[in-house]
Length: 317
Image (spheres, rainbow, N blue to C red):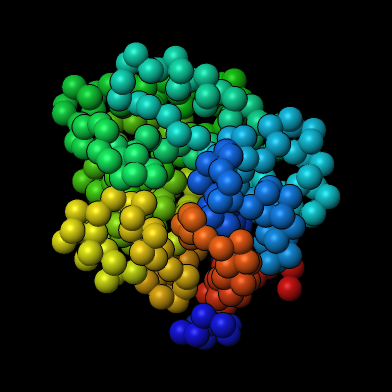
């Protein structure tokens, strides 16, 4: 596929009315609240709207304004709407539980203030995001899993009761919920009334999992979706060389459709069968990237996904 033209359109597909397409700061190379290699937030919002997206995930807390009124003004002025918030939090270290509750509560409050009901929860990585150095255990033992289940259930219940949001656990490369068995262990030990799965298609593929199988077998647990694709050749390098996710991203592991795995059309087809309204948020990990790189990718990605039946009825032309 040419990186300078529009991607080839997939075969004509019936629009999926239960799916709403959005994007996130991640697709503009934003990983941190502040970083001199990232775009200022106003340019990100301008480009997100200009690329034809309606829905917005908030990204790292502190990148966008955290004053609810300021955020609402910035988002609303561009015709955007908030789909959810994002937070990193430790579930497996009891001594960090209160700290985790505090930061999740801040994100949940901000998310709810914008009328959104989903908080994407990402466990901390066991590698440093900038150096890839391993700084934690890479597998949880049985006792740690019990701690994780109990902490997730407690956080999920508290956020639901206090803010009316659902916690959506996000599997992630270089964390202890990455492989499909780990994802299933998490889901099997948590309460579906308060804890859902943020199905990140790229991270599931990164961990060697089967997205379609997860959608079919855990349909009732999928509460939110990040759609992305990974380059199989670089995934082989990750496994052969023991690379961290930061290095994999620098090598271009996360690619725009229709390249990479899984096939986004297959994901949309399966999600469209579910009896649920779902946000499907584009995330193409680009940190760090040149400031002019994300916008044309975002446009081509939206056009391609519209052609798969995703978001065509909800987005501006």
